[in-house]
Image (cartoon, rainbow, N blue to C red; front, side, top):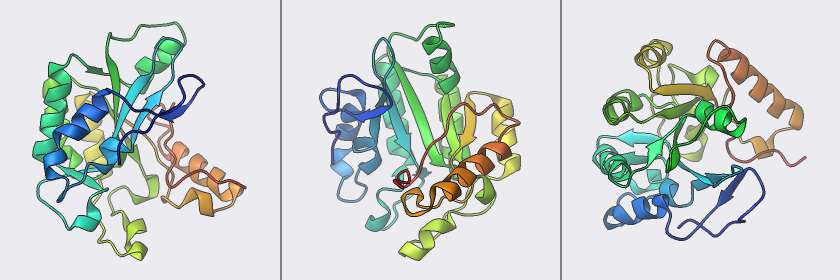
Length: 232
């Protein structure tokens, strides 16, 4: 699946098509699509609308050292592929920014680089410490990890009922060490990673509130939904 055409105006996150950086990156790893389909670099290429121009968001999950069975293809990319994608961004003149930088620019308290992009990583997988953090620090790229607060230091056990093996997540000690080195922001991604569309609005609010409160020691201006927002 590729980036789909979205609305040109409005607010929030829209799918987009055409000659975008995410489409370029997805195409660059197409040769591996039979083993590792770039699901989250195609469908999960989003744009955050600003008063000036859309800002692309590239959303990842895990960044693995080796291949996993095909059913895991939407959970990860390989570390060497990820490194190639990031160096492609660098060569093309893109500058990853933080959500704080975006918020400041939207408030008129700062400016964006000529070619901004947001790099995000859902769930907080342990392999980000070795396969993402050193590389992005070397490149000078800001990025954001969205943590499932009650699963920090544990695994993504929410996938087990669907027939997947659980994957280790970052510990609080690793999170604090990465935070101290700079370049990364940690934000809230619910407390337990439920399917938000399947729970009550009250339970969804509790998930959002509890995850944010757990991260209040690190200013939390952004929040990532998972599995869709409740419709009731």
